Length: 450
Image (tube, rainbow, N blue to C red; front, top):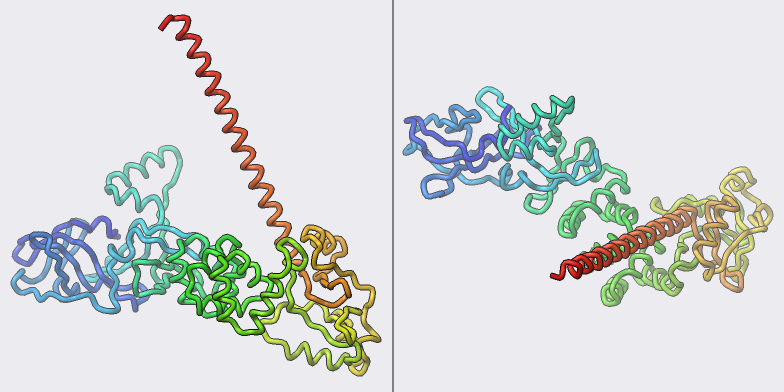
Protein backbone atom coordinates (compact mmCIF):
# COMPACT_ATOMS: atom_id res chain seq x y z
CA UNK A 1 0.00 0.00 0.00
CA UNK A 2 1.05 3.56 -0.69
CA UNK A 3 -0.17 6.86 0.70
CA UNK A 4 -0.31 10.20 -1.02
CA UNK A 5 1.71 11.80 1.77
CA UNK A 6 4.56 9.34 1.11
CA UNK A 7 4.77 10.26 -2.57
CA UNK A 8 4.48 14.03 -2.36
CA UNK A 9 7.79 15.77 -3.01
CA UNK A 10 9.53 12.61 -4.21
CA UNK A 11 11.62 12.74 -7.43
CA UNK A 12 10.38 12.16 -10.96
CA UNK A 13 13.14 10.55 -13.06
CA UNK A 14 13.10 10.09 -16.84
CA UNK A 15 14.27 7.01 -18.78
CA UNK A 16 17.83 8.35 -18.86
CA UNK A 17 17.95 8.50 -15.06
CA UNK A 18 17.81 12.30 -15.02
CA UNK A 19 15.70 13.94 -12.34
CA UNK A 20 13.23 16.25 -14.10
CA UNK A 21 11.13 17.34 -11.09
CA UNK A 22 9.29 16.38 -7.91
CA UNK A 23 5.77 14.97 -7.45
CA UNK A 24 3.25 17.71 -6.62
CA UNK A 25 -0.06 15.89 -7.16
CA UNK A 26 -1.87 12.89 -8.63
CA UNK A 27 -5.12 13.04 -10.61
CA UNK A 28 -7.93 10.50 -10.80
CA UNK A 29 -10.94 10.09 -13.04
CA UNK A 30 -14.04 10.09 -10.81
CA UNK A 31 -16.11 7.71 -12.92
CA UNK A 32 -14.69 4.44 -11.54
CA UNK A 33 -15.48 2.52 -8.35
CA UNK A 34 -11.84 2.56 -7.27
CA UNK A 35 -10.40 5.11 -9.70
CA UNK A 36 -7.04 4.77 -11.42
CA UNK A 37 -4.43 7.49 -11.19
CA UNK A 38 -4.75 9.07 -14.63
CA UNK A 39 -2.30 11.98 -14.54
CA UNK A 40 0.90 12.95 -12.78
CA UNK A 41 1.51 16.56 -11.76
CA UNK A 42 5.08 17.54 -10.95
CA UNK A 43 7.23 20.61 -10.50
CA UNK A 44 10.14 21.00 -12.85
CA UNK A 45 13.14 23.30 -12.62
CA UNK A 46 12.24 26.70 -11.20
CA UNK A 47 9.07 25.12 -9.72
CA UNK A 48 7.37 25.24 -13.13
CA UNK A 49 4.25 22.99 -13.00
CA UNK A 50 3.79 20.17 -15.53
CA UNK A 51 1.19 17.46 -16.03
CA UNK A 52 1.54 14.22 -18.00
CA UNK A 53 -0.51 11.10 -18.68
CA UNK A 54 0.14 8.35 -16.14
CA UNK A 55 -0.69 5.53 -18.56
CA UNK A 56 1.55 6.84 -21.34
CA UNK A 57 4.66 7.78 -19.40
CA UNK A 58 4.95 6.14 -15.95
CA UNK A 59 6.99 2.94 -15.97
CA UNK A 60 7.67 2.36 -12.26
CA UNK A 61 6.64 3.94 -8.95
CA UNK A 62 7.04 3.43 -5.21
CA UNK A 63 7.38 5.50 -2.06
CA UNK A 64 10.81 6.65 -3.23
CA UNK A 65 9.54 8.27 -6.44
CA UNK A 66 8.46 7.73 -10.04
CA UNK A 67 10.44 6.58 -13.07
CA UNK A 68 9.25 7.43 -16.58
CA UNK A 69 9.62 5.17 -19.59
CA UNK A 70 10.74 7.95 -21.96
CA UNK A 71 13.44 10.61 -21.97
CA UNK A 72 12.48 14.14 -20.94
CA UNK A 73 12.61 15.49 -24.52
CA UNK A 74 10.01 12.91 -25.68
CA UNK A 75 7.34 13.95 -23.17
CA UNK A 76 4.13 15.59 -24.40
CA UNK A 77 2.46 17.52 -21.61
CA UNK A 78 -1.31 17.48 -20.96
CA UNK A 79 -4.00 19.31 -18.95
CA UNK A 80 -6.49 18.37 -16.25
CA UNK A 81 -9.63 16.91 -17.85
CA UNK A 82 -13.23 17.78 -16.79
CA UNK A 83 -13.74 14.39 -15.11
CA UNK A 84 -10.41 14.48 -13.25
CA UNK A 85 -9.79 15.46 -9.62
CA UNK A 86 -6.43 16.36 -8.10
CA UNK A 87 -5.93 14.46 -4.85
CA UNK A 88 -3.74 16.91 -2.95
CA UNK A 89 -5.39 20.09 -4.19
CA UNK A 90 -9.01 18.97 -4.07
CA UNK A 91 -9.22 16.33 -1.34
CA UNK A 92 -6.28 16.43 1.07
CA UNK A 93 -6.96 18.45 4.24
CA UNK A 94 -10.54 19.10 3.09
CA UNK A 95 -13.62 18.49 5.18
CA UNK A 96 -15.89 15.63 4.20
CA UNK A 97 -19.10 14.35 5.73
CA UNK A 98 -19.08 10.82 7.08
CA UNK A 99 -22.77 9.92 6.92
CA UNK A 100 -22.26 6.69 8.81
CA UNK A 101 -20.90 8.48 11.86
CA UNK A 102 -22.99 11.59 11.03
CA UNK A 103 -20.08 13.93 11.58
CA UNK A 104 -17.82 16.22 9.65
CA UNK A 105 -14.27 14.87 9.39
CA UNK A 106 -11.02 15.95 7.77
CA UNK A 107 -9.09 14.08 5.09
CA UNK A 108 -5.63 13.62 6.62
CA UNK A 109 -4.23 11.35 3.91
CA UNK A 110 -5.31 9.25 0.92
CA UNK A 111 -4.68 5.53 0.66
CA UNK A 112 -3.52 4.11 -2.68
CA UNK A 113 -3.38 0.53 -3.94
CA UNK A 114 -0.81 -0.89 -6.35
CA UNK A 115 -2.46 -2.99 -9.06
CA UNK A 116 0.17 -4.15 -11.56
CA UNK A 117 1.34 -1.07 -13.43
CA UNK A 118 -1.64 0.89 -12.18
CA UNK A 119 -2.15 2.86 -9.01
CA UNK A 120 -5.70 3.19 -7.64
CA UNK A 121 -7.31 5.29 -4.93
CA UNK A 122 -8.85 3.21 -2.15
CA UNK A 123 -10.14 5.90 0.17
CA UNK A 124 -9.60 8.75 2.61
CA UNK A 125 -7.72 8.39 5.89
CA UNK A 126 -9.55 10.53 8.47
CA UNK A 127 -7.84 9.37 11.66
CA UNK A 128 -4.70 10.17 13.65
CA UNK A 129 -2.51 7.86 11.54
CA UNK A 130 -2.90 10.21 8.59
CA UNK A 131 -1.82 13.22 10.64
CA UNK A 132 1.22 11.40 12.02
CA UNK A 133 2.20 10.11 8.60
CA UNK A 134 1.93 13.63 7.22
CA UNK A 135 4.54 14.74 9.74
CA UNK A 136 6.84 11.86 8.78
CA UNK A 137 6.40 8.09 8.31
CA UNK A 138 8.89 7.50 11.13
CA UNK A 139 6.70 9.56 13.48
CA UNK A 140 3.73 7.37 12.60
CA UNK A 141 5.61 4.11 13.09
CA UNK A 142 7.18 5.26 16.37
CA UNK A 143 3.84 6.42 17.79
CA UNK A 144 2.10 3.17 16.83
CA UNK A 145 4.95 1.16 18.39
CA UNK A 146 4.83 3.12 21.66
CA UNK A 147 1.05 2.75 21.82
CA UNK A 148 1.42 -0.99 21.37
CA UNK A 149 3.71 -1.15 24.41
CA UNK A 150 0.79 0.16 26.45
CA UNK A 151 -1.65 -2.29 24.83
CA UNK A 152 -3.23 0.50 22.81
CA UNK A 153 -4.07 0.44 19.12
CA UNK A 154 -4.01 3.35 16.70
CA UNK A 155 -5.97 1.97 13.78
CA UNK A 156 -6.45 3.48 10.37
CA UNK A 157 -9.79 5.14 9.78
CA UNK A 158 -10.49 4.75 6.08
CA UNK A 159 -13.62 5.97 4.28
CA UNK A 160 -13.70 4.02 1.03
CA UNK A 161 -13.78 6.00 -2.20
CA UNK A 162 -16.57 3.90 -3.69
CA UNK A 163 -18.84 5.36 -1.00
CA UNK A 164 -17.80 8.96 -1.58
CA UNK A 165 -20.34 11.19 -3.28
CA UNK A 166 -18.75 14.18 -4.99
CA UNK A 167 -21.63 16.63 -5.03
CA UNK A 168 -19.84 19.52 -6.66
CA UNK A 169 -17.25 19.82 -9.37
CA UNK A 170 -15.85 22.81 -7.47
CA UNK A 171 -14.35 20.67 -4.75
CA UNK A 172 -12.71 23.61 -3.02
CA UNK A 173 -15.85 24.20 -0.97
CA UNK A 174 -17.15 20.89 0.33
CA UNK A 175 -16.71 17.16 -0.11
CA UNK A 176 -19.35 14.69 0.93
CA UNK A 177 -18.36 11.14 1.72
CA UNK A 178 -21.23 8.72 1.97
CA UNK A 179 -20.22 5.47 3.61
CA UNK A 180 -23.53 3.61 3.38
CA UNK A 181 -26.10 5.91 1.79
CA UNK A 182 -26.00 8.97 -0.37
CA UNK A 183 -27.07 12.22 1.22
CA UNK A 184 -30.49 12.29 -0.43
CA UNK A 185 -31.26 8.80 0.93
CA UNK A 186 -30.69 9.72 4.57
CA UNK A 187 -33.41 10.57 7.07
CA UNK A 188 -33.98 14.36 7.18
CA UNK A 189 -32.94 14.43 10.86
CA UNK A 190 -29.59 12.85 9.92
CA UNK A 191 -29.11 15.36 7.10
CA UNK A 192 -29.86 18.17 9.56
CA UNK A 193 -27.25 16.85 12.02
CA UNK A 194 -24.65 16.86 9.26
CA UNK A 195 -25.54 20.30 7.93
CA UNK A 196 -25.30 21.86 11.39
CA UNK A 197 -21.62 20.92 11.47
CA UNK A 198 -20.80 22.74 8.22
CA UNK A 199 -19.99 26.41 7.88
CA UNK A 200 -22.61 28.66 6.16
CA UNK A 201 -20.96 28.57 2.74
CA UNK A 202 -20.64 24.79 2.76
CA UNK A 203 -24.22 24.44 3.97
CA UNK A 204 -25.44 26.57 1.09
CA UNK A 205 -23.46 24.50 -1.42
CA UNK A 206 -24.99 21.27 -0.12
CA UNK A 207 -28.51 22.68 -0.35
CA UNK A 208 -28.02 23.30 -4.05
CA UNK A 209 -28.00 19.51 -4.49
CA UNK A 210 -31.17 18.79 -2.49
CA UNK A 211 -34.57 19.14 -4.10
CA UNK A 212 -37.19 21.34 -2.41
CA UNK A 213 -38.86 18.45 -0.57
CA UNK A 214 -35.56 17.15 0.86
CA UNK A 215 -34.38 20.66 1.76
CA UNK A 216 -37.68 21.52 3.48
CA UNK A 217 -37.60 18.37 5.62
CA UNK A 218 -33.95 18.91 6.56
CA UNK A 219 -34.57 22.54 7.55
CA UNK A 220 -37.50 21.51 9.73
CA UNK A 221 -35.19 19.16 11.64
CA UNK A 222 -32.45 21.74 12.19
CA UNK A 223 -32.03 23.60 15.47
CA UNK A 224 -33.65 27.06 15.54
CA UNK A 225 -30.31 28.88 15.75
CA UNK A 226 -29.18 27.35 12.46
CA UNK A 227 -32.50 27.80 10.63
CA UNK A 228 -32.58 31.59 10.82
CA UNK A 229 -28.88 31.98 9.97
CA UNK A 230 -29.33 29.73 6.96
CA UNK A 231 -32.32 31.66 5.60
CA UNK A 232 -30.55 34.98 6.06
CA UNK A 233 -27.82 33.83 3.66
CA UNK A 234 -30.04 31.92 1.21
CA UNK A 235 -31.17 33.33 -2.13
CA UNK A 236 -34.52 35.12 -1.64
CA UNK A 237 -36.41 33.20 -4.31
CA UNK A 238 -35.26 29.78 -3.04
CA UNK A 239 -35.84 30.81 0.58
CA UNK A 240 -39.40 31.95 -0.15
CA UNK A 241 -40.13 28.69 -1.98
CA UNK A 242 -38.81 26.59 0.89
CA UNK A 243 -40.83 28.55 3.46
CA UNK A 244 -43.96 28.07 1.37
CA UNK A 245 -43.42 24.30 1.39
CA UNK A 246 -43.02 24.11 5.15
CA UNK A 247 -45.72 23.65 7.78
CA UNK A 248 -47.04 27.13 8.63
CA UNK A 249 -46.01 26.91 12.30
CA UNK A 250 -42.44 25.90 11.40
CA UNK A 251 -42.25 28.66 8.78
CA UNK A 252 -43.58 31.24 11.25
CA UNK A 253 -40.96 30.24 13.83
CA UNK A 254 -38.20 30.85 11.27
CA UNK A 255 -39.65 34.17 10.07
CA UNK A 256 -39.78 35.40 13.69
CA UNK A 257 -36.02 35.02 13.96
CA UNK A 258 -35.21 36.74 10.65
CA UNK A 259 -34.42 40.41 10.27
CA UNK A 260 -37.48 42.52 9.45
CA UNK A 261 -36.23 43.32 5.93
CA UNK A 262 -35.51 39.69 5.10
CA UNK A 263 -38.81 38.47 6.54
CA UNK A 264 -40.87 41.01 4.57
CA UNK A 265 -38.99 40.22 1.37
CA UNK A 266 -39.68 36.50 1.68
CA UNK A 267 -43.34 36.97 2.61
CA UNK A 268 -43.90 39.20 -0.42
CA UNK A 269 -42.30 36.60 -2.71
CA UNK A 270 -44.49 33.78 -1.35
CA UNK A 271 -47.96 32.86 -2.53
CA UNK A 272 -50.74 34.97 -1.02
CA UNK A 273 -52.33 32.04 0.80
CA UNK A 274 -49.05 30.80 2.31
CA UNK A 275 -47.97 34.30 3.33
CA UNK A 276 -51.32 35.14 4.95
CA UNK A 277 -51.25 31.90 6.95
CA UNK A 278 -47.78 32.71 8.27
CA UNK A 279 -48.70 36.35 9.03
CA UNK A 280 -51.72 35.13 10.98
CA UNK A 281 -49.47 32.97 13.19
CA UNK A 282 -46.97 35.81 13.59
CA UNK A 283 -49.75 37.78 15.25
CA UNK A 284 -49.52 35.56 18.31
CA UNK A 285 -46.84 35.91 20.95
CA UNK A 286 -43.94 33.52 20.94
CA UNK A 287 -44.17 30.98 23.77
CA UNK A 288 -47.97 30.75 23.61
CA UNK A 289 -50.42 28.23 22.16
CA UNK A 290 -51.06 30.62 19.26
CA UNK A 291 -47.34 30.94 18.58
CA UNK A 292 -46.73 27.18 18.55
CA UNK A 293 -49.90 25.94 16.83
CA UNK A 294 -50.26 24.87 13.21
CA UNK A 295 -53.19 25.80 11.01
CA UNK A 296 -52.94 22.53 9.10
CA UNK A 297 -55.78 20.39 10.45
CA UNK A 298 -58.76 18.57 8.97
CA UNK A 299 -62.23 19.87 9.81
CA UNK A 300 -65.73 19.15 8.45
CA UNK A 301 -69.16 20.55 9.17
CA UNK A 302 -71.67 18.78 11.42
CA UNK A 303 -73.94 17.58 8.60
CA UNK A 304 -71.08 15.93 6.68
CA UNK A 305 -71.45 12.17 6.40
CA UNK A 306 -68.83 9.69 7.51
CA UNK A 307 -68.34 8.60 3.88
CA UNK A 308 -67.79 12.18 2.75
CA UNK A 309 -65.30 12.73 5.59
CA UNK A 310 -63.29 9.70 4.54
CA UNK A 311 -63.16 11.10 0.99
CA UNK A 312 -61.79 14.39 2.40
CA UNK A 313 -58.99 12.41 4.05
CA UNK A 314 -58.24 10.51 0.85
CA UNK A 315 -57.84 13.75 -1.09
CA UNK A 316 -55.22 15.21 1.25
CA UNK A 317 -51.77 15.91 -0.23
CA UNK A 318 -49.10 13.30 0.41
CA UNK A 319 -47.06 15.81 2.42
CA UNK A 320 -49.96 16.79 4.69
CA UNK A 321 -49.03 16.37 8.38
CA UNK A 322 -50.21 13.26 10.19
CA UNK A 323 -53.94 13.39 10.93
CA UNK A 324 -54.83 12.40 14.50
CA UNK A 325 -58.40 13.65 14.59
CA UNK A 326 -61.02 15.12 12.29
CA UNK A 327 -62.55 18.17 13.94
CA UNK A 328 -66.24 18.98 13.61
CA UNK A 329 -67.34 22.61 13.27
CA UNK A 330 -70.77 24.24 13.41
CA UNK A 331 -72.06 26.77 10.89
CA UNK A 332 -70.05 29.55 12.56
CA UNK A 333 -66.73 27.69 12.59
CA UNK A 334 -66.97 26.88 16.28
CA UNK A 335 -65.48 23.60 17.49
CA UNK A 336 -68.31 21.25 18.45
CA UNK A 337 -66.60 17.87 18.48
CA UNK A 338 -64.01 15.54 17.02
CA UNK A 339 -63.71 12.10 15.45
CA UNK A 340 -60.92 9.57 15.74
CA UNK A 341 -59.87 7.69 12.63
CA UNK A 342 -60.97 4.48 14.34
CA UNK A 343 -64.52 5.85 14.72
CA UNK A 344 -64.64 6.79 11.05
CA UNK A 345 -63.51 3.35 9.91
CA UNK A 346 -66.00 1.48 12.12
CA UNK A 347 -69.05 3.69 11.43
CA UNK A 348 -71.58 3.38 8.62
CA UNK A 349 -70.76 5.77 5.75
CA UNK A 350 -74.27 7.23 5.65
CA UNK A 351 -74.27 8.60 9.20
CA UNK A 352 -73.63 12.28 9.79
CA UNK A 353 -70.58 13.07 11.88
CA UNK A 354 -72.66 14.94 14.51
CA UNK A 355 -74.23 11.58 15.42
CA UNK A 356 -70.96 9.85 16.22
CA UNK A 357 -68.57 12.67 17.19
CA UNK A 358 -67.06 13.05 20.65
CA UNK A 359 -68.30 16.38 21.97
CA UNK A 360 -66.52 16.70 25.34
CA UNK A 361 -63.44 18.28 23.76
CA UNK A 362 -60.55 19.76 25.73
CA UNK A 363 -59.20 22.91 24.11
CA UNK A 364 -56.99 25.92 24.90
CA UNK A 365 -56.99 29.58 23.96
CA UNK A 366 -54.17 31.10 21.90
CA UNK A 367 -52.86 33.08 24.90
CA UNK A 368 -52.20 29.94 26.97
CA UNK A 369 -48.50 29.50 27.71
CA UNK A 370 -46.70 26.72 25.88
CA UNK A 371 -45.71 25.13 29.21
CA UNK A 372 -49.38 24.83 30.24
CA UNK A 373 -50.38 23.52 26.82
CA UNK A 374 -47.65 20.88 26.92
CA UNK A 375 -48.67 19.91 30.46
CA UNK A 376 -52.31 19.43 29.37
CA UNK A 377 -51.32 17.37 26.32
CA UNK A 378 -49.33 14.96 28.49
CA UNK A 379 -51.88 15.02 31.32
CA UNK A 380 -54.75 13.97 29.06
CA UNK A 381 -52.53 11.82 26.79
CA UNK A 382 -53.78 13.31 23.54
CA UNK A 383 -51.80 13.59 20.29
CA UNK A 384 -53.13 17.07 19.45
CA UNK A 385 -54.77 19.92 21.34
CA UNK A 386 -57.24 22.21 19.50
CA UNK A 387 -56.78 25.96 19.89
CA UNK A 388 -59.95 28.12 19.86
CA UNK A 389 -60.61 31.85 20.27
CA UNK A 390 -62.80 33.43 22.95
CA UNK A 391 -65.88 32.56 20.89
CA UNK A 392 -64.92 28.93 20.44
CA UNK A 393 -63.90 29.34 16.78
CA UNK A 394 -61.27 26.77 15.74
CA UNK A 395 -57.88 28.40 15.02
CA UNK A 396 -55.41 25.52 14.89
CA UNK A 397 -53.89 22.63 16.80
CA UNK A 398 -50.81 22.04 18.94
CA UNK A 399 -49.37 18.57 18.35
CA UNK A 400 -47.56 16.38 20.84
CA UNK A 401 -44.37 16.95 18.79
CA UNK A 402 -44.71 20.69 19.41
CA UNK A 403 -45.17 19.98 23.12
CA UNK A 404 -41.98 17.93 23.23
CA UNK A 405 -40.11 20.71 21.41
CA UNK A 406 -41.29 23.23 24.01
CA UNK A 407 -40.11 20.98 26.85
CA UNK A 408 -36.71 20.43 25.20
CA UNK A 409 -36.26 24.18 24.77
CA UNK A 410 -37.03 24.76 28.45
CA UNK A 411 -34.58 22.06 29.51
CA UNK A 412 -31.88 23.46 27.22
CA UNK A 413 -32.53 26.97 28.52
CA UNK A 414 -32.28 25.78 32.14
CA UNK A 415 -29.01 23.98 31.41
CA UNK A 416 -27.62 27.09 29.74
CA UNK A 417 -28.59 29.24 32.71
CA UNK A 418 -27.00 26.69 35.03
CA UNK A 419 -23.75 26.77 33.04
CA UNK A 420 -23.77 30.57 33.02
CA UNK A 421 -24.36 30.73 36.78
CA UNK A 422 -21.64 28.15 37.33
CA UNK A 423 -19.26 30.15 35.17
CA UNK A 424 -20.10 33.34 37.03
CA UNK A 425 -19.53 31.54 40.32
CA UNK A 426 -16.13 30.31 39.19
CA UNK A 427 -15.25 33.77 37.95
CA UNK A 428 -16.24 35.40 41.24
CA UNK A 429 -14.29 32.79 43.21
CA UNK A 430 -11.24 33.40 41.04
CA UNK A 431 -11.47 37.17 41.57
CA UNK A 432 -11.81 36.71 45.33
CA UNK A 433 -8.80 34.36 45.33
CA UNK A 434 -6.78 36.84 43.30
CA UNK A 435 -7.73 39.67 45.67
CA UNK A 436 -6.71 37.64 48.71
CA UNK A 437 -3.45 36.65 47.06
CA UNK A 438 -2.70 40.29 46.18
CA UNK A 439 -3.52 41.40 49.74
CA UNK A 440 -1.21 38.74 51.19
CA UNK A 441 1.55 39.75 48.78
CA UNK A 442 1.22 43.41 49.80
CA UNK A 443 1.49 42.43 53.45
CA UNK A 444 4.67 40.46 52.75
CA UNK A 445 6.13 43.39 50.84
CA UNK A 446 5.26 45.68 53.75
CA UNK A 447 6.94 43.37 56.28
CA UNK A 448 10.10 43.18 54.18
CA UNK A 449 10.08 46.93 53.79
CA UNK A 450 10.45 46.70 50.02
